[in-house]
Length: 242
Ligand SMILES: Nc1ncnc2c1ncn2[C@@H]1O[C@H](COP(=O)(O)OP(=O)(O)O)[C@@H](O)[C@H]1O
Ligand SMILES: [Mg+2]
Image (cartoon, rainbow, N blue to C red; front, side, top):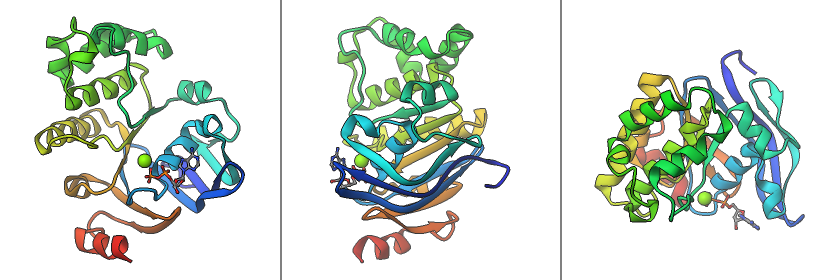
């Protein structure tokens, strides 16, 4: 493992229900301060990989049967997801889960349970990146649009003061304008705060332009690992169509 690597997934195999092979021989590293694109069509294994890192597979009868996941040099295999979160890994799952009948402010406060100290400063930081959440903070989260909800769940992850932010298909179901707005903020946080981020998407051309590293999964395997310059849309098309 290179000194600068924050996350080191090596040769990981994941099964569901003891039989379905969802990942095979997957090696995936994330450098500190990286913005890594994890691309692949539906069913490729993007969510499984993120859940393997966050320790969430046991909830779905999934299991890492081979290989190792290490964060900051320490293995995460068998570590409870709450402890993985405490070590600094935040997974923003698809589906935009939050308390829809609680206000935005209440959701953000609830999300700071992982890191109480500095919560007030972090709330300020979050509001500066997502002004719409400040404006609407007394509204129930259920009032938000899909894009605003996506911003809220990212903001909630930030309230836990993570070192590594994993975003699972943040653009799913959003209008192009909203995708743009969400990616603007992710990119700014990466640039200005040095936040280490992994973004799983099927295809987002914008992501290819800003990523520091690109991985492409297909049928549970890494079929491409390239610097962003080499992972252009044409190369991706070839992978997706093969
Ligand atoms: N809870 C589960 N139980 C059984 N199989 C699953 C489960 N979740 C995902 N899979 C299977 O694992 C493979 C990878 O899925 P997933 O990680 O969700 O891919 P992606 O996020 O790239 O769409 C697929 O074949 C999918 O059907
Ligand atoms: Mg998925």
